[in-house]
Image 1 (cartoon, helix red, strand yellow):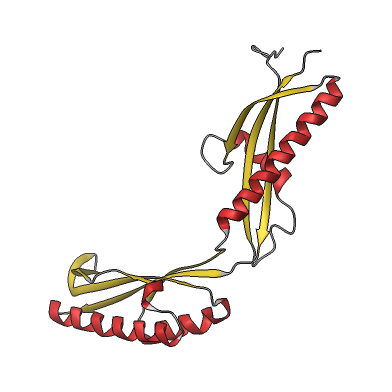
Image 2 (cartoon, helix red, strand yellow):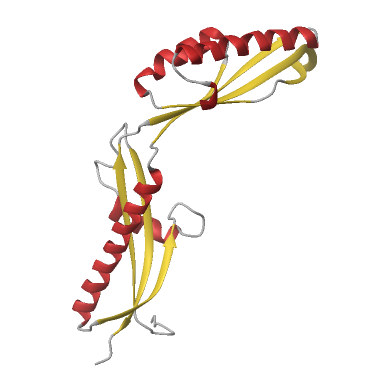
Length: 213
């Protein structure tokens, strides 16, 4: 038999999500060159960096929208017959690029690779107004939780009193798995899972007192 040890009111969980078409893309890629001498590796990498930056400018992406690392150097090895063998000196530069021209992503990647980038680490789509979308989702989550509270109160024949507790919940974080199924059921629809869209979700726990007549 289960009993509430400290009865105090009505608690409900609410979740909601907002869907939006992405309006920006973030790309991460590297230039990696291996040569037998450090100077040659630096030279090859610098030439590729200049070519890649030129390709980015040709696509209207200025230097301010590009995060590039300094050139790094390390010894490169390879395994031959189970043994490690010196392969040369590896020079590397890492880039992170943000662009709002989503229709240009494919041509841009083609040109960046042609210019000398030889490792693509990721292409992620996002929305610039994520903070506003998160706020909208949180408002809807509060409304969903309040609707549950009203339903429970009506079914139990009591009136909802003052709001006593508000707790923000991220169902994807460790320790909140007990809420995850509720969040998925309340916040996810077939439209939310449509490809090409960004879904911003939020969840909350509300606690109300039971009004005393």
